[in-house]
Amino acid sequence: MKINIRTKDIELNDTLRTFIEEKIGSLKHFIVNIDNSPKKGRAAIEVNFEVEKITKHHHKGEIYRAEANFLLNGKPLRSEATSNDLKKAIVIVKDELQRLIRKDRTKNKDLFIRSLRKIKERFRK
Image 1 (cartoon, helix red, strand yellow):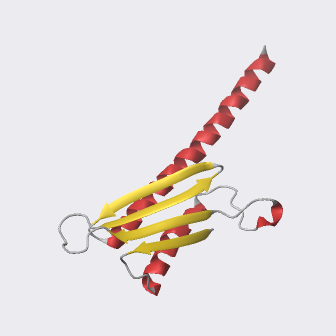
Image 2: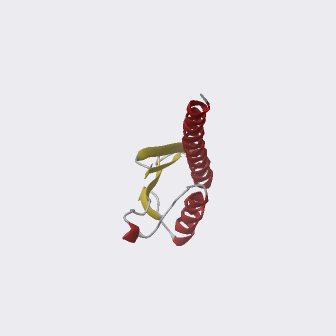
Image 3: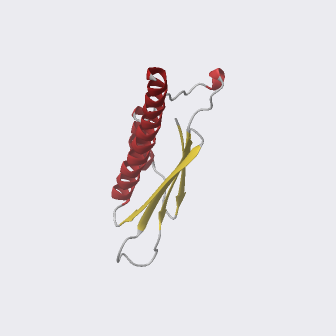
């Protein structure tokens, strides 16, 4: 899993980079059939992650925004969050992506099981 990090009005230091890579990198445990080697005909998953500071002159309200985009099995997954704490916004994005990945995985599994049931019913007749 390759993570491209883009910042706007925030300095990307090593601690922020490692925090983002740890949180977003943990999503690969939820992705079924992930393959990081493009040798087998599959491209590695590339996550575009963006963090920015929305306001510059005041600290009232939600001022940080985090966004993540990537393709999973040809379907685009996107999550965005704003918060008054940058790390909290990153965690919210990670949780939302985790929920979307699980939803996609269970949807595919349910479709597979449903098709097997139809085949089984046809053979019973």
